[in-house]
Length: 74
Image (tube, rainbow, N blue to C red; front, side, top):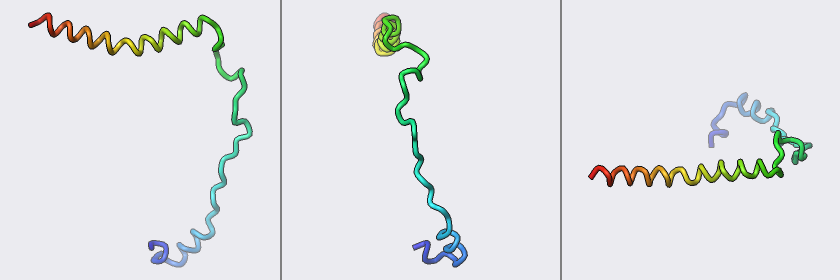
């Protein structure tokens, strides 16, 4: 092992080094007032669905456009 071949001062320094304490969270779960928007409003729902829907549909639209463009040139 590496520790067996280490010098004596190095082994003593390692033995004296403190072990890190785990982080303790006193506020693990945030309350409802920590986000800057109202997640229950219909306007937020419409924006969320349109944003996610556009992100899902856009690759298919781009692929269809590229396929249509390649068949039109031949």
